[in-house]
Length: 71
Image (cartoon, rainbow, N blue to C red; front, side):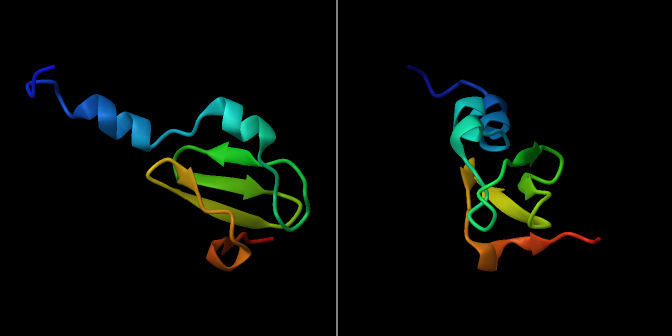
């Protein structure tokens, strides 16, 4: 491997979440489904009205780290 590979593809991977992971993840509060908001890099639980951040492709599934959604 060479070091001349562009860094852009790696940046794209960090903003994404594996669809297989999304299929098995549930909200830790309601145990309901999550929807990935790519623009905000968050997993949204409509039932709990919380949005969990995704940092470097890793979902942070802690309620205290979640952002409350407006009603």
